[in-house]
Image 1: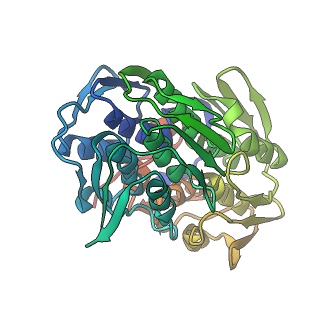
Image 2: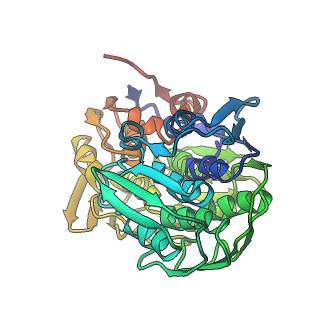
Image 3: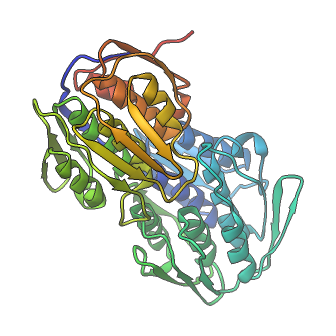
Length: 415
């Protein structure tokens, strides 16, 4: 339940990045030694990954606030069952490490947010190029291999999880693997840095060509997860959409350059320091901005819904073109329930900004859509009820507590 009550002010700390934490947890499958992971966010998806690893016989133990020790020496099964995988598409990230380290994997075809087709064929063709035998049977990916062999793999399209899966497989493969048209996201770089700390030999992470020289074994390490750039951007928009002033700390401005440019175009004052970003939109109505989502370092698809919310109350007309996922405008219908003026034409949304939105019951359809509805509600007159907030718990740590710290009137209710 959210009651719009004017500008938000204050400081909020960014949590660790969900999209970095999940592959790094899976990377623990590549060694029999202990991988200690710090700055781990308390999220539903992180808990699902922990339960998936535990079900395989992997030891996952708390090691202080936001830290776990993961040891896969006692792994008892290489099966990732449908009950867990269906709720989180990132479960597919156990496939590469299991195959590379254990020589086999049985992984259910994944689920996750209903934002369009995200096929795993690029993962599978890459692993087959490295010598794996793969068959699909009864909704499962059944994979077997001796020691994987290095290969030159060119991705048809940029895929973050595909890059991560094959990167993890390649570190224990025999010889050199080259990944071309690889994803360049900061989360891919963070995974590579963790793998290097474990003894892998990797060059080019963060560019479109990654070279991996396989090693015979990896060892344990201690790694701290990077800040969550999408959570950071969401809180910055919370400041802008309410015409307030918000500083996000323990973050990295270099990871959000495309987002910060758009906030400046919207009329916000933007200041940055070594590990903080501040947005100042005090007493000013945002200006509409045009968004075109592209792979990193372009504008991130995971910030598209939040900027749509901002455009809903901005001055002028904003156009948002979504090029990554074909079904990622489901939040538009819910925003219109709050009084937004949005027209959808294929993969383009045209938003005619209104002065004010009005509170109403709305329903979250996916993770980032739920964040957009919360942002819109913060700027609306009256009370908004957002249902199905389990989506938001997949990617935002204690979001209502953090927003309350900025002055928001927001509370979680049941029934």
